[in-house]
Length: 342
Ligand SMILES: Nc1ncnc2c1ncn2[C@@H]1O[C@H](COP(=O)(O)OP(=O)(O)O)[C@@H](O)[C@H]1O
Ligand SMILES: [Mg+2]
Image 1 (cartoon, rainbow, N blue to C red):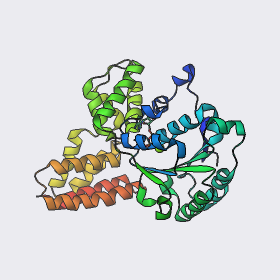
Image 2: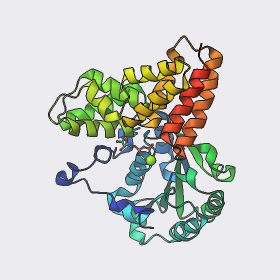
Image 3: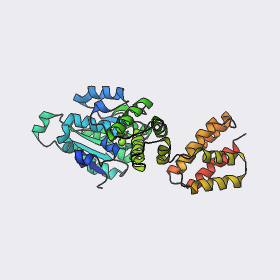
Image 4: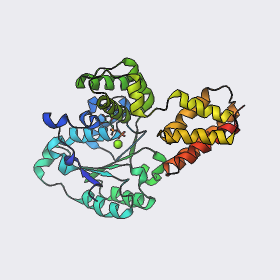
């Protein structure tokens, strides 16, 4: 239960001494709404709603600033001192059931604000942040809907999720929806080069290009990889290869071997190649993504072939997420590719 309820105050404090040991995604988490990049429309609406904050549903891909935005907004509303008493941050993916919603969320939602002196300084409500709300069960979401209705005066909710389709309509309709866009290339580059500058990191500009390409709009991933790359080759200038090594990018010749094994139409050849690649320690998800990108550029595949392979990619990706064997999933993709190739 301890890990489920993370009150804002337990976050490490950014004193001069301790900030140097923090992971960079915490160290460089924007402290105010002004520092959130790439989400202009959302910020304008939020700035206008500060006096009468609605219930909110933030959705969009990972690493685009959803958690940072609500924390920055709460800090602006309550100030750092009152964050502890006014903000409860929960991660719904740890406890998805109705029990937790009924007990802990309800108890916090209905609790009164402690002292009147607090009220004069800031709005007279609390905020409950429910991160990863898309993993809440349907029953838990129904219970949440009733709590939201009943305790609106005292508590505003901010639900955060990647997939808005997993939130029940009755809950959605009680919130103002904010869509977070994938962070564009320029915003990524600005933020990453700012961090390099602050940390005194030397880098080739192609290395940042590689980082931006590999992280696909997820700034959390990009910052984490940069942080890891800086540790991997301390004091060296960061190169494209350092980034590839950190990210676990599969080298081009290995992807070629896989595609050519499929072209050979020999099952034994395909199995042997897949087996070698998996034994080298590359991640299944990374392999299938790179193989698929290669297929899209290869003239031996017509439109029909690409559609068939794309369809299989969806199924294979889901099986990997569900914990399916990496070997069998890569093998399954390569067999499909072999079938769909001129
Ligand atoms: N829009 C953004 N502007 C500035 N920094 C961002 C933005 N989005 C993500 N980041 C960086 O990435 C990290 C993770 O962001 P976070 O807000 O947790 O993303 P999300 O909740 O959307 O997955 C933050 O600590 C911050 O450094
Ligand atoms: Mg988040």
